[in-house]
Amino acid sequence: MSEVRFDGRVAIVTGAGAGLGRSHALGLAARGAKVIVNDLGAATDGTGTGSEAAQTVVEEIRAAGGKAIANGANVADPEQVQAMVDHAIAEYGHVDILVNNAGILRDKTFAKMTLDDFQKVVDVHLMGSVNCTHALWRHMLEREYGRIVLTTSSSGLYGNFGQSNYGAAKASMLGLMNVLHHEGSRKNVRTNMLAPTATTRMTEELFPAEVKDLLKPETITPGLLALVSEDGPSRMILGAGGGCFAETKIYESRGVALQGDDLSPEGVLANMDTIRSAEGQTPMEGAFSQTEKYIAMAAELRGIDLQKKD
Image (cartoon, rainbow, N blue to C red; front, top):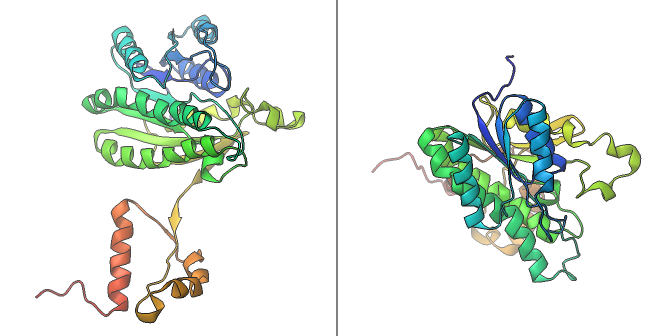
C-alpha cells in the first residue's frame, strides 16, 4: 500500500494543545499537512484560557520543517469558530480536514450533577463539533473534498458511572455522523468517529502506572490519520488504544412480528428472548431501512403480498 501523505492538505485540529489533539496535529504535519492548532488553553473542566499550549505545538511543527498556526477559539462559540475557519482559509486557501477533538470533563453522579455542568460538557463536545463542522460544511461540499472526524468515547457508546453529561455528548456523535455521511458522501465529504482510549491529562488518573505507557496518544493517531486520508472510509466508528484498532457497529436483531392477542405488552414480554437474540441481526444502512424491514415482516405475518399489483 502506498504511503499516506497529506501534502497540499490543510487540517484544523481542535483541542490540539496537549494529549490526543497534540499527537494528531504532529502526526498530520509530519506527513505534509498544514495544521491549524486550535486550543482554548482551558483546564480539564473548561475553566480558564491561555494560548501557550497551542503555540508550543506550532513551534514543534515548525522546528520539524512543517507549517502551522495557532488558534485560541472557543469551539462552543460559533462566532469564534467562524473566525478561525476564515483565518485558516485566508492563510492557506482552503481546509480539507477537520478533527473535532476538543473536550472537557465535569464528572459527577447524575444525582449530584448540576444542569450547568451538564450543559457545559454538551456545549463543548457536541455543539463544539457542530460549530466547527457547520463552519466548514459548505466549503467542503463546494470543493467536493472533506474529511471530518468526530471524537466519541466508550463512555457514550457503552456507558460509564458518573459521566452522564459526557456520555450523552459523546453518544450524540453517532446521530451526527450518520446524517453527515448521507448528506456529504455524494460530494466526497466523509465523516467518521474515533473512539480513543488513551492516557491524557483528562484520563491519567484512571489508569495505574504500568498501563499508562501502553495507552499513549501516539498509539491512537495512526488510526486518526487513516480515517482522514484520501482513501479513508465514511461512517465508521473506529475504536483505538495501545496500537489496537476495532470497529464498533450498530446492529438490529431479527426480532418478531406480532398480531392479534400477541400484539400486547404481555406478548412483547413473552417474546423478549427472541427479540433480544443476536441470531440474524443485521446492520441498518439508514433510518428507512428499519421501516422497510418492519413493513416486510408485518406484511408476511398477515399474508399480504406487497409485490401484488391491482
